[in-house]
Picture 1 (cartoon, rainbow, N blue to C red):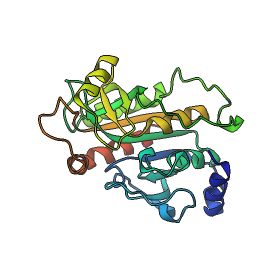
Picture 2 (picture 1 turned 180 degrees about the vertical axis):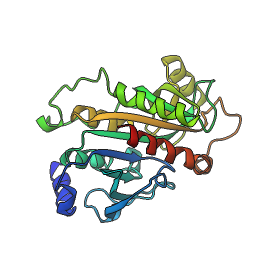
Picture 3 (picture 1 turned 30 degrees about the vertical axis):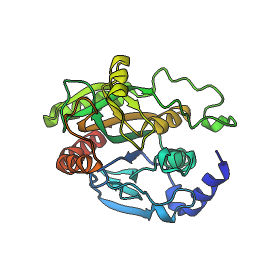
Picture 4 (picture 1 turned 90 degrees about the horizontal axis):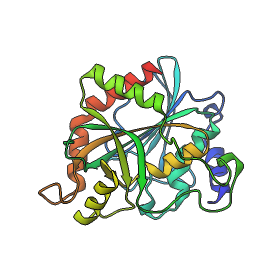
Length: 272
């Protein structure tokens, strides 16, 4: 990756972003962008204005960076994400994590909308990600090693922080939401998976599948940032669903779940 791209992006952001460490970071996937409650907005910038990031090209991703205060904490929220399948390279995909690292942010919650593989899941359920399977075989850390990114061979034994996962569970139980632990399978996209691919993922132990999250989680873990992963099951995966898959269905499911999404994020921030 081109390190200078990250320097330009960080240089564009106002100094107040780095004046004091962010207490927590959020990367909000499909439909999650409206699930924020803010006491005070400190900075609000469209992705299109940030060098090297660029506007989101996917429906359901509002594409703006918001630094805000909530309950006395500074929260850095990336509302929407860039995906590798958009063709802009790894820099735009991991840009939010690199900026969080430069802001001194210790932890991040990565959210997404996914397809359910585990037969116990139904649309509207939440999966607290405990591990992942990188079916794409792609890794943002390929290239020159940098010490600030964890060196050459970062350990991935525990990508997703147990304590943060436990806090998410406590919140889901308190709010009366259906949530289970699960393994997230990363598919490169942009097409949905075939039934045979889903069957292979199921055999490998995947509970949900999606086209994001894993690259950011790997990069964040390598950088020493604690990671939580939370997935909304927006539909059933190919071969499990009895009808063709489409992104409109994903957005509709996210819209219906928005109150629950907002409540889960709010509860997590209160428990930190």
